[in-house]
Length: 280
View 1 (cartoon, helix red, strand yellow):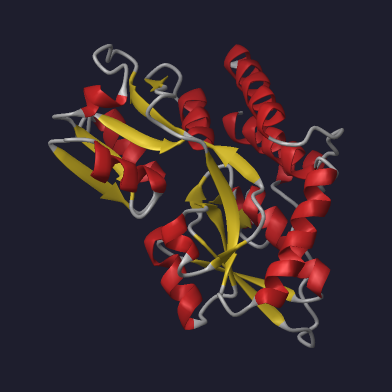
View 2: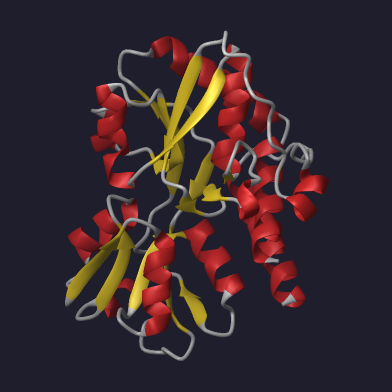
């Protein structure tokens, strides 16, 4: 397991260096304490500051997940996006509230005003930009295929034809499989963890999911699962934080935080930290 973890961290670090600015990383806040006791829990607000609501789907490690024992970066929630959201709230002087819901409903919740912004490893796509404004990109990804370790019949996207393929509902993986794969059926899940469990249980044949998530899943179940890459079929994707089309002030404030964290190497450091933390 230690060899897998070391290899994973090296791969993730090289991936980020290739796709993002490369300043000297700084460790995430409370990283030492988080390894033993969960992430740092911020103090309660005084009730006199405004409240800003982050919408997410907390089943997408390492970006958003429910922390062990309810001790997360913010309340029970932890992950890279949660850490960024905490910084956004601090930057604008607001108390942060996190609303956990289905990924596919997040933009609708934004449009109706239930949430103020979406931080959910959401890929910036033209169709989504018609419904929301997106921040500057803060992470680069692609899609990977996860299969059982003894499955040597899948080596590309084309090999998914005729299979039962699992995806997270409303994600890029869902859209890609729907448009490009002649699957026997597409099994859509609200959380990636549900798809992975069904894959290991044998009720589906493969899962298509974002590369960072796939790497963590396979590191955790290295004796049961493996990754198939098809770089010709899957394009690069860029994650952004979404706000309402009319909320340009919040968009600029979020961009300021992303620029500061990117230039300081904080997002890169958070990614490496959570990769190690979750694969342990």
